[in-house]
Image 1: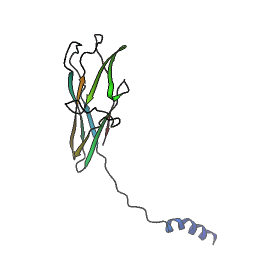
Image 2: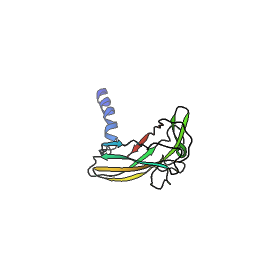
Image 3: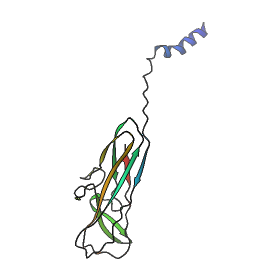
Image 4: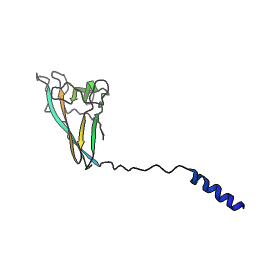
Length: 157
């Protein structure tokens, strides 16, 4: 009799438990990211016009029957400020910025403090392309040499 009570006690939680919830599986797309470096032409403090360039980020996913949003965020770079990015060479700084529009009105960032983190609708397999516009304002007094900055790109899909 003791054995039957033990077995009944072990089975009771199973018999009284609600049925398990139906599981639904979702296959996340595999995505690859390709970035182009943002290279400016040689800068001269004597130039009257801004020094501009373009670059792009491509996100290619293999989700055949899925509609999803792809969002990119850009870090502020070494300056720590989206609104005043700087390329550096030693102790010298060259101010520049990255925009999401050719008119240089919307600063590419993470969506905070007035910056824009662009979003594209992605349908099925294919590519979402994000064009970026770089600008160095004219008449900055700097030392000769190569200046650089590194921006981290975060992709959400």
